[in-house]
Image (cartoon, rainbow, N blue to C red; front, side, top):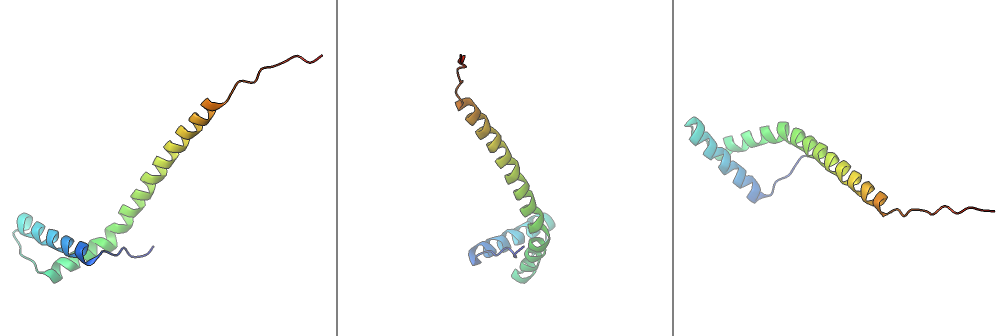
Length: 86
């Protein structure tokens, strides 16, 4: 799997969120480099888990949609009248 890339704006936003979390929840002030390291750690360890869950959720949704589509197709079938042949 390719490594997930964030845009500079997204990366800056996440770094800010990490810094805010550390300050609010832990009472620690961390710099950009430390927050970037935390982000890289979670991106490398959590991204594959989240990605796989998203794929699983997508498969489930597609299965549901295919079942619904199949039901819709069956509902379109027309009855064939049986005729006697002599």
